[in-house]
Length: 340
Image (cartoon, rainbow, N blue to C red):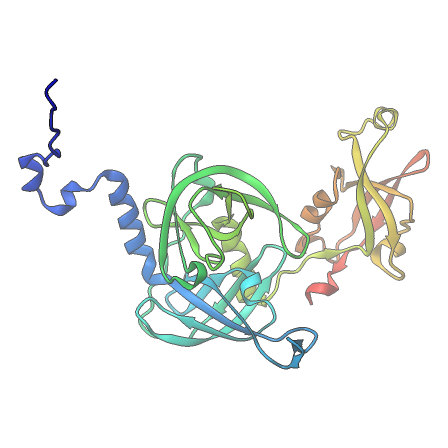
C-alpha cells in the first residue's frame, strides 16, 4: 500500500494579491470597526478607598486599592462607570487610551442601578456614541471593551443572549432591563461599554456569574442615559420612601378570588417605622400590601419600581388586606433618607 503525503493547502493565488482588508470577513470587520471607534473613549479607573471601619489588615488608614473601567460619553469630560467601582472612593484616577492620566471627580452615584458619573478636566477628549437599547435584538453582535485584571483596553466579542433580565444590585434593589451577553467579562471590565457593530454603546457592563461560562450582564444604555442625566443635574437619584419592612408572601387562592386580585402574592408588612409616611397613613404590622394607585403589587420589587421621584410629596392610595377586609390608605411618600 503506497503512503500518500498530504501537502499543506496553499492560499489561492487570487487571495494573496488582495489587500489585507479584503481578507477579513464581515464579522472581523465589524469588531475592528466598533473597537476602533469606541476604544479612544474607554478609560481605566483606579480607586483608593478607605475601609469604613478605618482599618485594613489591622493598620488604620491604609488605602484599599481597586480598579475598573469606564467610558467618556461627553466631549467635556463626563464618563460613566459602575457605582461599585467608585463607591466609598477617597481618590479616583482616570487613565486614557493615549496614556494621559487625570484626577477624577465623582459627580454622583446610584447604587440601586450600579451606575456612577465621574468627570475629568482634560482637553481633546473622544466621547463614545450612545445607542438605543430598545432597538437591541437577541443574537446581534455585542462587543465588550474594558480592563479585565488590569489588562487595559481588552476587546471581547459575542452576541446579545437575552433581553429584559433582572439582576440584584449590591444595594439589594432589583435592576430591570438588563442585557445578557456571552461576550467574556472578568473583574475589571465593570463599568466598561458593551457596543454594537456600529460602535454605539448599548450597555454598561456590570456583572458576571461566578463559575459560569458565558453569563455576563450589562445595564441597558437607555437606563444609563436617564440615570446619568439625573446624576449630572442633582448628584443623586431621588426615590420615594414609605417606612415599612416587608416580604413577598403567597396569598390563599380563596383570598385572591374573594377580592378579585390579579396576582396570588402580596407584600406582608413586618414592620412600620415610627413617624413614617406609612404610620401616619394608618398602615399596621400584619397588613398585606396589594396595590398602589390601583396598580397591583405582587412583590417587594414591584413596590420599588413604583416608588419613584414622582411619588415624593404626592398622595398615593395603598390597597391592603387587613384580616378579612380590604382597606384603602392614603399615604404621602417622602424622599428616601438613605439617598440624601
